[in-house]
Amino acid sequence: MTITLFAVAEVQAFLICLARVLSLVTALPLFGSQQVPARVRLGLGVLLALLVFPVVGETLPRQELSALALAVLIGREVILGFMVGFVGRLIFTAVEMGGAVVGYQMGFAAANVFDPQNQSQISLISRFQSTLALLIFMALDAHYLFFEAMVRSFRILPPGDLNLGGEAVPFLLRLAGDMFTLGVQLSAPILAVLLMSGFILGILARIFPQLNVFLLSFPINIGVAFLVIGLTLSMVAALLGREFGALEGRFEQLFLFLR
View 1 (cartoon, rainbow, N blue to C red):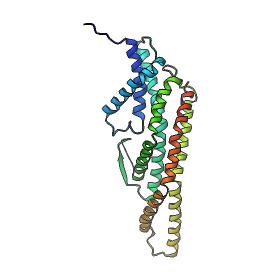
View 2 (cartoon, rainbow, N blue to C red; view 1 turned 60 degrees about the horizontal axis):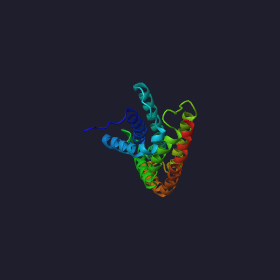
View 3 (cartoon, rainbow, N blue to C red; view 1 turned 60 degrees about the vertical axis):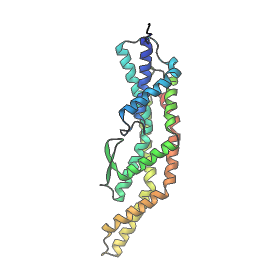
View 4 (cartoon, rainbow, N blue to C red; view 1 turned 30 degrees about the vertical axis):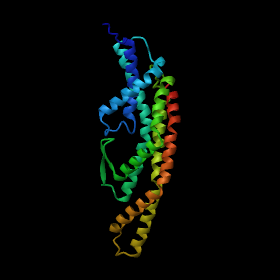
């Protein structure tokens, strides 16, 4: 009986493809969460790599590489996958930042919960808005944009053509700055109402000195903030929908800057 083994070059090409796909899956906002077991992430990455490999096989190197060259190439692919995932994670970071500011102003500075995705303590409002953003992310099928970008990246950036010395890093820094703006936009209506509430309570404290404004401010701020959060959910959904819709163009720009 004759057993046909895979060629070494073929196995190396699959490992290169797997490195880019698996790093992207690990960096995804949903599938890269610590709530998802490592075996599930690994299995999903291998399954996607098996599906993608026949499609992008012509872009992968087919000659046998040395161990050092293969390690360097796999390292560059991992960096590319994490950079693509970073573009998507920036939106969720902006949502969490806006929620943290709102929670602090509401009086929830000490009301923290454990975030299994980032393995850290975050504000209660941040957790709520992050979960809302994740639901919108899935409802809009934005995760498919990452899978499409994964396949498209092999055609625009074949393995070995990654250029980290271009405009890619400044582009990511500009995106990070834009996410601060997004965080302010998400929290601005609530902060404006809370500022007005504090102004009114300050006037009442001057008019009625015997009024305990400090204790009165907690239930008022919490109630008003939750009311405004409920009224602005459609605005938040529209802003997040715009940002998720812009991911495809951002991926294209990132790939072009990395050429």
